[in-house]
View 1 (tube, rainbow, N blue to C red):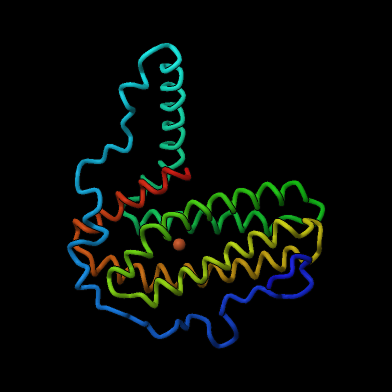
View 2 (view 1 turned 180 degrees about the vertical axis):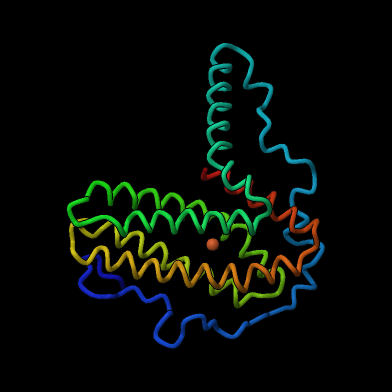
Length: 231
Ligand SMILES: [Fe+2]
């Protein structure tokens, strides 16, 4: 269990000495072939109507107000998600989000124990960025990795995300002037960098290569749809 006072290094995401990069032997229960054709890429075969505003909502003065509010919110979400949408396919977008998260770590590491307000603000920004990112990965990309037959890889990445959440909570609970706070941030960054390395250099390229162009496009669309929910 993590200790939230920062008394000791209690968050161990399985990256002990000599195990960096090691993942459990893939335990593929099936080769994925049986599920092909009825899996992720068959969902939402019809045209995406997720952005449509029901006509009924626009009837009557009150309903018009609600409709305008809804559209404004959709516009805000689209603007937030736009940074990811501009990045090409699902892999490019996730890579850009990794860079954005690491840039927040850079800012946090420049702070001192006196910058308690700034630390809280930057930690909140990091949490928002990682939550949206993880939501997309956990709801679309990791299931796709399983669908492609790499269950062990997907389970390992999900496992590491659990420790991302643990670090975020621990850093929120610790006093921002605690001299050990930044040490924990650096340990957290180590976890994130190893996780990013696994995704960008090994697992994601393998998934992208395994899928057809049409499947990669579908994956991009599904992921962006998920991203809009938390944008
Ligand atoms: Fe990621």
